[in-house]
Length: 138
Image (cartoon, rainbow, N blue to C red; front, side, top):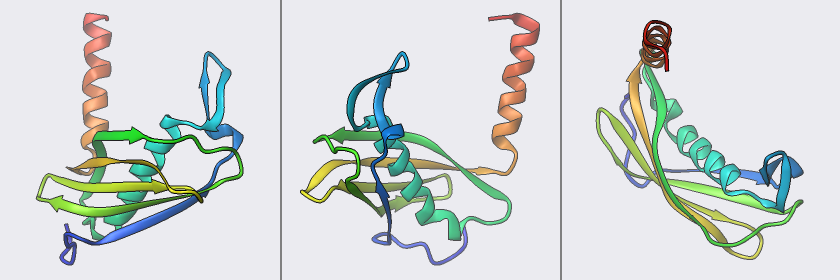
C-alpha cells in the first residue's frame, strides 16, 4: 500500500434504488425493495473506493469477508448513501465499517474486510481450480 492510508478515513457512495436492485429469487421479484444483495455490493464498492488510491501498481484487492445487518426496507426511487470508514489495516487486509442510510435513517450497517493480493493472484487461483476440475472432475 502507498503511504497515507489512515484509520478514520472515509468514503461515500450515493445511489438511487432501481428495480434491478430488488430482491429476486428464481427470476421473480420477492420484495419490490432494495435487496440485501445490492446492499452488500454497494458496501463492498464504497470500501474498495476508499482504498483504490492507495493500491500499489503490483497490488489488487478482493472482498474477503462481509458481515452486515439489513435493518429496514427501501423502495424504488429512494436515495441511499453508503459511508465506509477505515477501522483497521495491515499488509494483508483492510477493514471498514459501513453505514447505509436512506432519507429516513439507517437501513443497514456492517463490516467489510478486503484482502490485499499481488496482481494475478486471483487468475492463478482460478486456473488452478479449472485444472483440478479438468483432471479430477467435480
